[in-house]
Image (tube, rainbow, N blue to C red; front, side, top):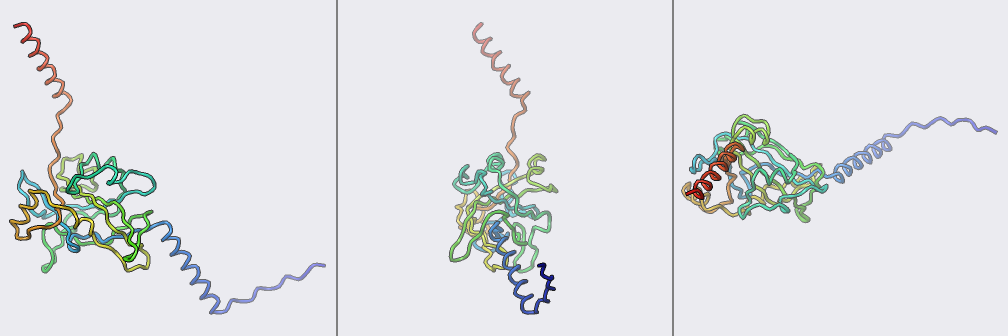
Length: 250
């Protein structure tokens, strides 16, 4: 015997609220499980250094620059720790590209500089929260760290690779730093890892002259190291060989 189809009863308001709340919890849990690590992209808190430009050996706070935050991809790519920065947290562009870090956030042009009359000035940036997708964050009680790289460059280049190819002055500095979990969490760490980096002798002398003394190592943008053209190297080789032949004949 076939039973008759029973019509669905309409959901009560309280039942609908419970369902919506459950869906919200599931959605937030999904975001946390996939990882949305967060960090404050600023050099005005936590004892960090500043963005500095190197003009022929003379250091000064950069009046205009672009800064970008990169983070290590925990899915299996190399990290700054495996490649190794120098004693001051600095790394070369070739080390950075081998690191395969992922871009978190880019702040460009004059918008990067904090022009606030009370706290702003050249070399300072304070804007937005950078998100490290796929990297799970932690809490203040149970911090989770990731390897971060800060890059800064001069000129109107939209990316670090374009700036490097265009001969802009570039600076790179790497450090381990805690990340927040994102979502509804109010725990968003500052760049405390940067604050732990020792200064280079030249940067220490510069900051002392500015009246600040011992600080974290600055993010120093310098001109790219000149690499001889292949033709130049070949000509040098021919010249050296000719000199050796001439000496043997004598």
